[in-house]
Amino acid sequence: MALIECPVCRKRMSSKAPVCPHCQASTNGDNESLSRISHIQKSSSLMNQSFVAMTLFIAGVVIWFWGGEPAEGMRANIAGICFVFGFVGYLITRVRIVLHKRKSV
Ligand SMILES: [Zn+2]
Image (cartoon, rainbow, N blue to C red; front, side, top):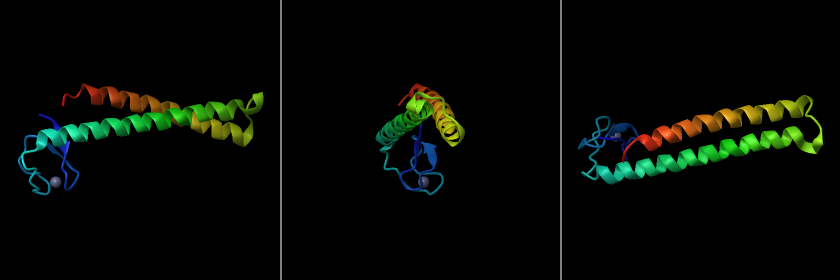
């Protein structure tokens, strides 16, 4: 059994349920492919998030070392924010991807 997104109200429901428990929409018994589609969509959105986080991280590093001198003042703040958010965001996204991949489809 897997959790899928209801195609109508976007709430989580069981792939085995014939109708959505939230909005009573029928899923036409096509839950397996719905579940697969929702899994693939989730995977690609997680990949996008990790790409954005990685870009932010690299941007932070580039801003920090721009011009070959240590960043100061405003530039250091901007670089630090990019660096920390990118790094933490990337770690969180990686963990979510691993957890997501463990779920069987
Ligand atoms: Zn629903």
